[in-house]
Image (tube, rainbow, N blue to C red; front, top):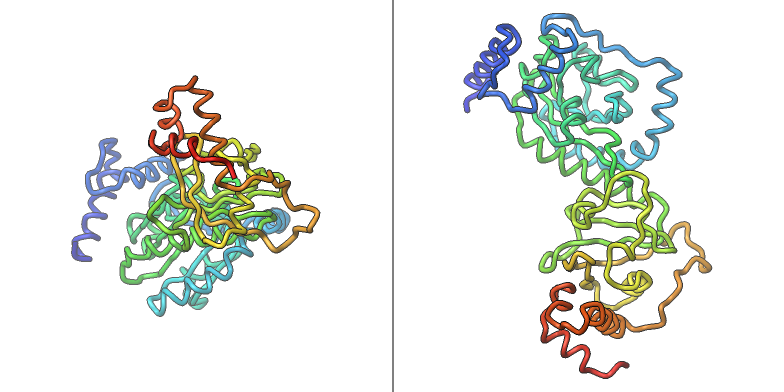
Length: 362
């Protein structure tokens, strides 16, 4: 769609929903965006009223900065690369906490332009109640990457901005903030939605790996070799407890979010100690079974930071081959001798069950 046509379509949508107060769905408007506009209207906000771009109090900001320190530290190297990727197109990066309060800013902010200066300040409140629907509020509410251009922002005062935003999740799986890419009266760049999503994933992974842990597992489905930011990442302590996971790993393993402690033995259909043994194998990748019957390809790496020799996990004393055989034998016993049922539960063929049980133990 040509730029002029797109702006006209946005203007027509604003007229229908914001001024004519039509409650019907507007075809030209994304459902998540219409929900944002309607939230603002339900709070009594009007598109034409002025936006203050106020900062939170100094005491509140000290609390926010302390709570956000791990996120800011994990984000800074990623944001440096992000700014380089954006080149000279006139966009800059804003990092907020989960409430929409700015906690860091990177990139070429024109401080002589008030429209850029007022939003690119650490401590300014850019929540939806404060500044209306933006990429920041939409990403934090919908928990998905978004793109907003000019008049898609709720307030008229924000119609100069074009923004891409993506939520950032902490090691516990909860949304901890969001990453926003904003330009003032710049050309529309929808590709930034992909860039901001990838950058948010990089921040999540950096944060996860910086937190204390004893073992990192890179996860992917068989046939897809682990090795980049698209991998599932899972971290364990020396006792096999899961200390954190990125969103991809949580989806792969059906892990709940929050602080509830989950043990590796609740997820992997093998002795958890052998996950540490995988890190010592010469071959980089190993296929691990899940209790769901699925199998994942994993690359394991021990953490070199914050772990003493005395914290080495207890060894099961068994080779991985023998562990697999024992698991198959247990599955057959559980299935009361029904080899087909045991094979289905383990996600392997009956021939593999017979072969494994027919071979002598080493």
